[in-house]
Length: 313
Image 1: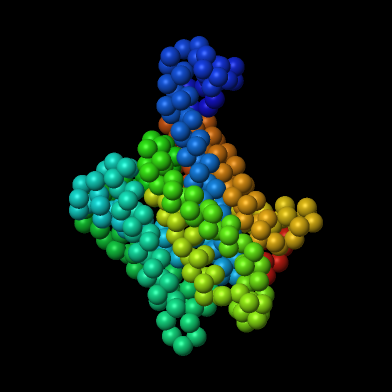
Image 2: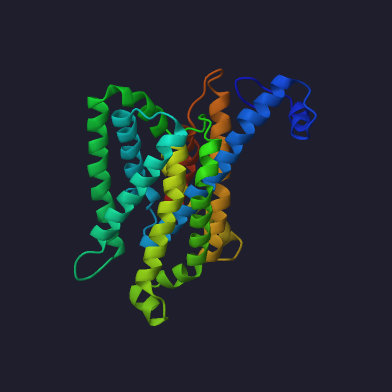
């Protein structure tokens, strides 16, 4: 219904049912707004699920997928492909973004797993911060040296659903589905991991394998979402806490078998609301969804932090 041109609800419904009152309405609904909505649903679910998985994996209530360097790796790869190879089409640079996300996550995993103690949540977080800082510095330097990459990076880094990435979404859909399935398969083991590595091992869980599977799932989910719409980092941070409030009020408790699916359902709602609001407040232009997510979800998250004690999850 909403955008640079507002369409009455009846006309939207008729168009969706195949009886468009106007060919221009048919083009707007099917060629622009339906693909944009599908993109928001897919990427929002991926970021929400990745955020919940990240917080459970690291037992850090303020963790988000960016802590593994996924967003920084994708950003660096996009700027590199744009500045050095002149690639500007989403169908082309998305593969560079995905490769950059994978490479950054592997580097964080190897760095966080080095040493006698092996991989721990603290070491994994510190490795992610270090890799993120390095890649962010390299990205900034490249943007300054190659001004032609600046416009693409500025638009993409704000987190936007405005680009027509429906074809790219179809290409990376298998990776997205694989990440969702893997994350949900990890959920029962994450309940044991919340008790501590020693207790999880005593219960028969293979802690190293669980962490590896979780890292792979986070990479697949966040890598594809970030490559498609840019980094919307607040989504993966706040939505899992919203899911915890709902599951606690429902009497379920902190069961990851429920928390992860609820996070995957809430995140697209928040992203869609942000996208619609961004289209309404700046007509005929629009404000990127990534910017609005922070304004919409920020007050809720601040209130949540003030009212509840955020212990280890």
